[in-house]
Image 1 (spheres, helix red, strand yellow):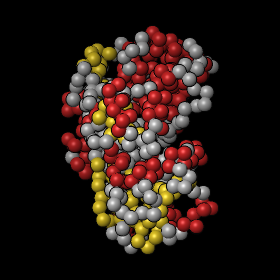
Image 2: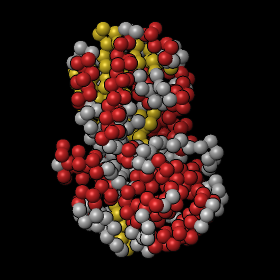
Image 3: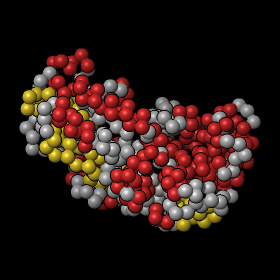
Image 4: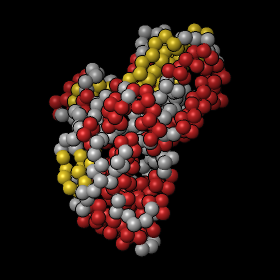
Length: 449
């Protein structure tokens, strides 16, 4: 096996996750990655499938182990989970290739005899597939101990009942969600709705783009590389990564963005804004949207992470240096009292976008939620002093949790002597197997003024 193949690099990345689990973080592709788009896509697909179904895959693999999962070194866990993901969730890779490559990777990664162990376990896992059902709704697989649901709506019926006889831990394993999160959702919205939400996290979400030039969009619609999303003005993209990047760069405000994510900035349309600050700008999706919604405004952006800040700087080429500025902390004081619109798209637990931020599902816990809320409060205290007296705050998260949404927005309003003028909680839309043009992640925003 080529040591730099997509499958080998996927196992490298899964091994890093196994060392950190459950405190997972997004790992950027390495500079030495493949230049072949298909190979890179395979690497990402294997990693994402493994992360999305981690607990379910662990349940299947553990059924074929003779020793505790926790006693197995991270590299071997990676080979087992990555191999099982390819066997159970990806249909075009032959079993012998999965096993052979997993064994060879394990030999290199561990420099020991673990390859034989991986070979034996993966062969046993391959024998657990009884029947692949093209469609099984969540109301059915959640009642069975021998069914592994997949992101396209299909499901494997297994030869063994590997999941818990108790309903809650069974669904947690089948959807790879923490027990605390599912318990919170059940307490808030009931068993049926929480199960639907849990199933929605299994979706492999489509790439959705917006603000594409109409003439260009027409060309891509005719070519089949774009399809209209159910939300007007948004499109589902179905093209290689390089074509997608070119498409997004072709229009000033074009960007990859879910409809729900766009609602926070869209809610400020009609406000009189001379200076807007995107205080948690990331790579600039909402900064770009601010430029579109407020074409006469100066858009300021801040991002503490150096990699994202570097990407953020490229927006000058699209919005123009006179309209867009990336702030350094030393420049903050110059804008005290001058910000008309403060966008606080704060870090959060991401529970509204778990289909897209697959690593976030494993991090959720009481301590994580408390820590995130503390960070959100610190960010608020850092940036609200720069607001003009009549300035407006937009509080935005990708979370469904009340501590980060309604409660947080009201705290911000109280602390700044303002009121919540409007707010919106968007639940994720879609279930595994649904047409991608109907699928969207969730979000929350509040306009405070």
